[in-house]
Length: 205
Image (cartoon, rainbow, N blue to C red; front, top):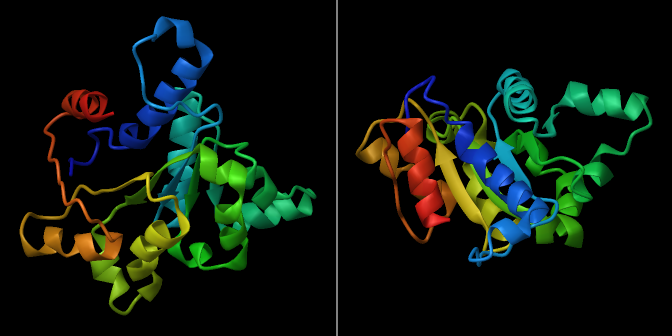
C-alpha cells in the first residue's frame, strides 16, 4: 500500500531488473543463491486498458523493460500484423505483460500459462489497483473476484503473488483482498517511501 506517485510500479519492475542484472553478470554476485531466470517475466493484472498502456510506456521509458498491454486493441493490431502475440508471451519475449481479468479466463491464457518456458521463467503475479477487486468484483466486473483463483490454479505455487493499491484503508477493506488473492501467508507491508519499499524487497528477495 503506497500513495499515488510513490512509484508503486517499481515493485514489479525491480524484480525483473534484478534477474536481468544477475543473469548478465553472475560473477559479480557469487553469494546470491536465489534461482535466477534468464528470461524473467511477470504478470500485472490491471482494471483498465488506459492503465495497462501507461504502465507499459513507463516501464519502457524509465527502465528499458520490454512490456506489452494485452488489450483488445493491441492484440487486434498484432493479429493484423500477423504476429502471434500469445506465442511471443509464452516464449517470454516480454518481461512484463499487463492483462485484464477477463482475458485471463480465455483459452489463450490457459495455453500461455501451460507453456513450460513461460512457467519456468515466471517470477510473479501482481494485482494492480487491488481495491477494485472487491469494489468492482461484486457486480460490475465479477471476474475481478477470480484473479486469485487464476494465480493459485494456473501459476506455479512457488511464484510470488502480491497486490498494490494507493486507496484501500486498513481493516475490513484491506482484509477482504486476501481471499480473492488466495493467499495462505498473509503478510501486508505498508511503506511510506519507495526507497523503503526497495529495501524491504531486497531483504525478502
